[in-house]
Figure 1 (spheres, rainbow, N blue to C red):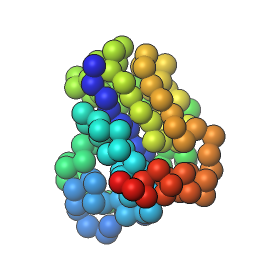
Figure 2 (figure 1 turned 90 degrees about the vertical axis):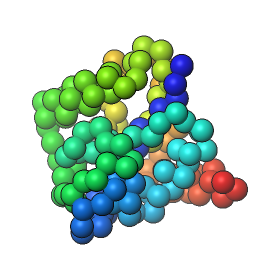
Figure 3 (figure 1 turned 180 degrees about the vertical axis):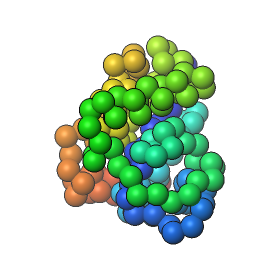
Figure 4 (figure 1 turned 60 degrees about the horizontal axis):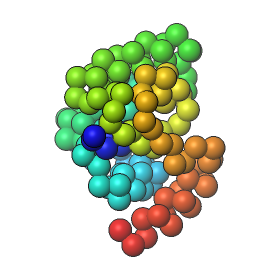
Amino acid sequence: MAKIVLISCVSKKLSCKSKAKDLYISSLFKFNLKYADSFFPDNIFILSAKYGLVSLDDIIDPYDMTLNNMNSKEIKLWADNVLVKLSKIADLKNDEFIFLAGDNYRKYLISSINNYKIPLKGLGIGKQLHYLKEKTKNV
C-alpha cells in the first residue's frame, strides 16, 4: 500500500514557467509541502485547478485559475480528469491518500478513494498555517 499526499494549488505563483514545487510560492503551500514530507509518502502531487494532477517536478506555466470560481459541474469534470490520471499511478481502493486541500479540491475525489485522511479539515487559512507551523517546526 502506497501513501500519497495531495496538496491543492494556491493563487500566489512565480511569473515564469517553473517546476510545480517551485511555482507556488505562498507560505501555505510551502508549509503544506514541508508537512507532506513529514508523512514519508511514496509520492506527493499537486491538485492544480488548470492542470489537474501535477507531479512536483512537472514544469508548468503560471496561471490564474481556481476551483473556487467554478460551478459544481466544472469541478466534477476536473475531478473526473484527476481521478483518471490518479488511477493510472495509484490504487484508489488500497493506497492511503492524505489531502492537504480545501473542500472544492477533494469533495468529488474522496467518493472514489477508500482510504484517506484530511488533517486540516474544518480549519480556516490562519488556523491551517498555525497548525502547519507547529507540525513542521522540528522537521
